[in-house]
Image 1 (cartoon, rainbow, N blue to C red):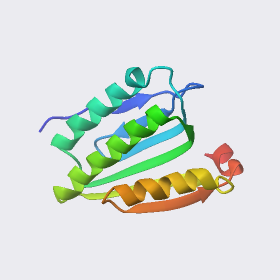
Image 2 (image 1 turned 180 degrees about the vertical axis):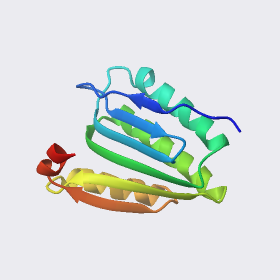
Image 3 (image 1 turned 120 degrees about the horizontal axis):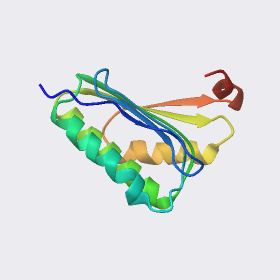
Length: 135
């Protein structure tokens, strides 16, 4: 079995935190995603996930907590979500946790749109800014 490294990318003002742990099947993206060049940021993430799909955990949880992202990031996020379909088709348990600020209806609606486009279950969790300060 091929053991993969954890993918860990620190957040910046224009790119999100990325923490993908192949051992426990927990993938987390949070913050803002408005990189100047989306491919520079997202290609390593997408390539890592392609490798993960080859030998995934039995259960994969994909947690997204984005406060804002641009169109080019939206396309890459959708691509990742489509890849989750492949895991589900392989018989893996897959779910998406879509986290959004209680007052951010737009981000909730974007999550609803994504949930409609992919075949994996979505769990919607609202939070308040104070919740993040504790985390």
